[in-house]
Length: 171
Image 1 (cartoon, rainbow, N blue to C red):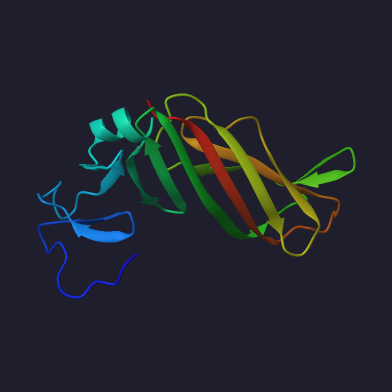
Image 2 (image 1 turned 180 degrees about the vertical axis):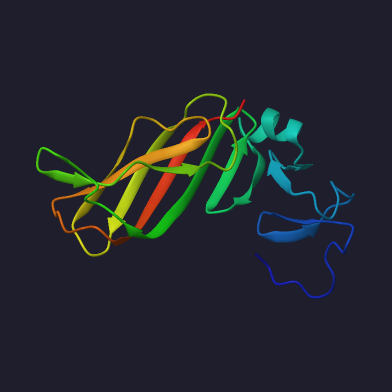
């Protein structure tokens, strides 16, 4: 890019780079808050229809945070959310089976209702014991469910932290 002295573009004109030179557009493209893209030498305002037709097949229609969750909803109907569940005083020795001790099912409300049961991935556990996290079936349309297991019968009051990634469909 070449250095520029003086004003290029101004508030109403976006700038673009062509062959290493920064130039001002001859007309306003979009508005101050509308992103633009360049394709085949033409600058175009990014609108949902131009994005789908010209640049990519899918785009985010909603995103945000809700409680422990961060989420995105895509135009195609795909939805994803991720968050970290933390709690203290969790009894990891509440149940016993085949040499393992494990907590009662921990259910965490999702940030919105999925159209069908999503798929979840979990990681984390207790800081004081060697543990692993496993889902108790798949999440429901409104809750992620898992338990935390260990080999210690004394794991009765643990601080736990579980990262969750949930993917499914919102429409």
